[in-house]
Length: 154
Image 1 (cartoon, rainbow, N blue to C red):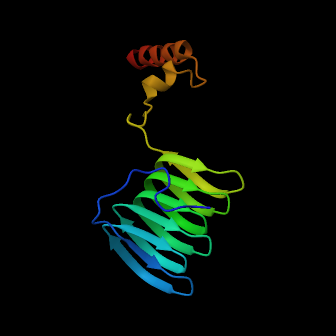
Image 2 (image 1 turned 180 degrees about the vertical axis):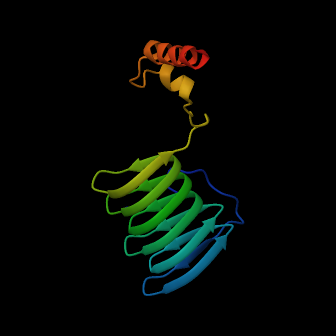
């Protein structure tokens, strides 16, 4: 079961938690400086500079951008966070882009994940693809090219 602030450093005394209680349905976009705890239903976009927690009875559909996200309920959509933790009762469907991904035994994750790294993604060019062994023989490609240049000169 997810616990607010578990394994995370204490935040300043000015931080609070906004709660969407069980039985509450919220449709729209939220921008928060502090934590958000969802036990009800949310449909829309949530952006928090702190932690977003979907409790066991909670469900969200949409997009989350936050420092940390902890799911013990269900989520459908996209998540962008430094850390995503899906606990054993959690269910996530969609696309996640995170620095750290933790999926506990029993949790459900159906979708795509991208782990952020410090290095930029590697892009292949035609010359580097040949050097990496893209299945073509560079010698035969070079000789064909030379032959066609010779044919053009005749």
